[in-house]
Length: 283
Ligand SMILES: Cc1cc2nc3c(=O)[nH]c(=O)nc-3n(C[C@H](O)[C@H](O)[C@H](O)COP(=O)(O)OP(=O)(O)OC[C@H]3O[C@@H](n4cnc5c(N)ncnc54)[C@H](O)[C@@H]3O)c2cc1C
Image (cartoon, rainbow, N blue to C red; front, side, top):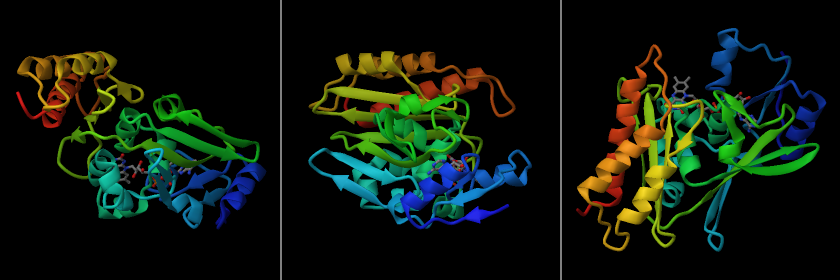
């Protein structure tokens, strides 16, 4: 199959417009698995990893946001200076695959695949990130919650390129946790990201691997906002326990060959409670 290698964003967009059925290839850590397994037979490939605009990121201090190019890798996300700005995304990135996968795999590819087990996605959902898409028809931007529409289904049109994600930088504790059958090279059975916005007096929680897409646990968020003390970082044992229970109740897991729904739901309760306790260490 022909492999086109654009070096500018405009070139990449034109190539996709000329052949909308092309497969976009970033790190290839999902795409090539599908091709090798015979699940995908692209007529043409547009390999984007030489497009500098997609491989870079910028921090806007005034807006308190980081715009991350779609082809930025986990290896870059997990180290300073990005890790200092977006600690939960760094933590999630460190859990992805192996060093090889983290050097090749990209955040845009995680969004493109949109697996409920994608490790970057709960963080993007908890932080209310925004996805940027571009095609020859123009550009559009949407909340990550609208971009993810189902199991491995997104709002991206065939001729669109994910160009970047804009992620708010919050003032407050944030963290990510994952349960799998072992500690590395594992598809998550349950994941959770908790992010605190101290000046805004909100606690966000998003969970993964327990529904068709990432789920925001709004009832747990409401409980935490009312019950914790943001100034002294205090939460009662009862708040932590109810937070976990409400997060578990928001999850919609299924039984499959990796784990039962009951186990996954229990795991979400444990992860959510632990993360809230780390965010609010005082009782
Ligand atoms: C051994 C192994 C271990 C893994 N472990 C983990 C893990 O622990 N956690 C995890 O979340 N994932 C894991 N993965 C999956 C994979 O590494 C991630 O989903 C990664 O983020 C994919 O990024 P990529 O750049 O390789 O994407 P690619 O494979 O290049 O692309 C993935 C999909 O997104 C599309 N795409 C990519 N970039 C764009 C773009 N800019 N615009 C539009 N469409 C685009 C592609 O067409 C394709 O459909 C693992 C994979 C392997 C092989």
